Picture (spheres, rainbow, N blue to C red):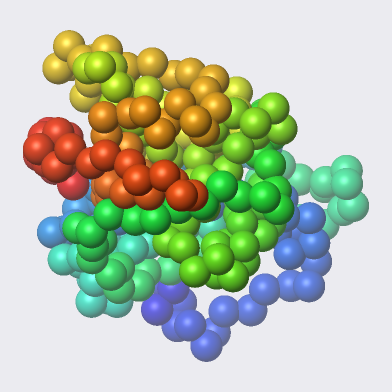
Length: 271
């Protein structure tokens, strides 16, 4: 079962036109939403990023995206797909209508799918520095979708390397993000994460970690930093909507993981 333009639809009945602007021009965005024990985790933050993405792409979002109806239907989809206890919803939004680079409409079409989400392992990960692509800040870089080929190429490099993930840097060589996670490091009691001007995605958990630090009185800075600065950190970790994982190695450098500190964040955010 799918949810297409707010209508439940059997998978085999989905028919998309070849003029679809997501297919023709990548003219849209997506959200990955975790379902945990019958609720959409961090739903209000997802709603905020949906609004930001729609404004950046000049898309008109229906009122039911914000008034509770969409949330209710996404949970119903998760129930029908038997992933209400723990699952992953992908919400894809694109501009409706035809046209070339000048669109004929700013209305949207959208599709939601729900699948089983594998639990995130507790083990640390090994990462390399991506050589094939660089991130670049733009009005579209803070949400998911418009720059997807960049992450696909980084994923191919990761696969060839045999590592768990790749660290992407921006065009100036500053640390930006991992393939599908934001990166954080703790040094001398201060938490650091790359600034959005590096072209990283403004991740849902990134927002929550920064807010949690503010609530706990922990200094947290969004910075421009080179990869070598991470090597000296007291703790390095990756975070996305599915959870938090320590990073134990960057290229040839062994990194530190403070499990007690990571457990405190996980407990504070209930991830």
